[in-house]
Amino acid sequence: MPRDDQIPAGVSEGYARPSVFLPLLPFVQTYRVKILEETAGHIVIEAPFQEALSTPPDLFPASFVGTIGDIAAVSACNSLLPAGWACATLDFTVKMTGQARGEKLIARGRVLQNGRTLSVGAADIYCVSQGQERLCGSVLASTRNFKI
Image 1 (cartoon, one colour):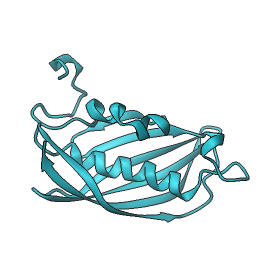
Image 2 (tube, rainbow, N blue to C red):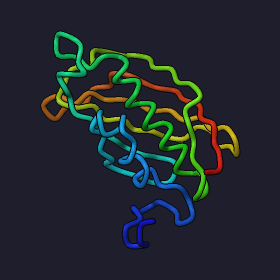
Image 3 (tube, rainbow, N blue to C red):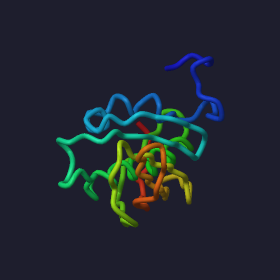
Image 4 (cartoon, rainbow, N blue to C red):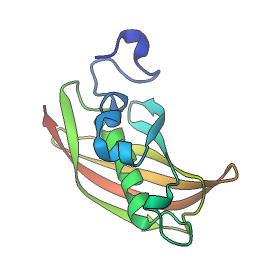
C-alpha cells in the first residue's frame, strides 16, 4: 500500500488505484504501458511502438489499439471502486478511426457509468507521430466489479 505522499493528486484515499496494480500485470509489462495521469474516474496511459507487435508497414494493429483502449477504460472504472475491489473486462469494442502509425499510442480513459457490480468505461486512443496526436481509435468497455 502506498504512503499518503505517494497517492497521485486527484485520487481519493480509500479507493482502488490503477497505478498500484497495472505495473504488476504481465500483459501490461509486455505492452510497456506507462501511466501518465491518474485521477478518480480518469486515466491517461501510453504505450510505445514495438516492431515485434506491429503490422506491416509499421502500424499498430487494431488488436494493440483495442488492448490499450481497454486498459485505459477499465482502469478508469477501477479507480472509482473502493479499496479491496477490482474489476475485469466483460467485453470491449474497438472502432478504428484512422491508421495507427507513430512512435507511441496515448489512451485517455474515462468512466461512463459506475456501478456496484458492473461499470462502463470508454477511451480515445491517439497515435503520436513527431509530437502530434491524431485520433486513431475509440474503445467502449464493460467491467465486472468484485471484492478481492
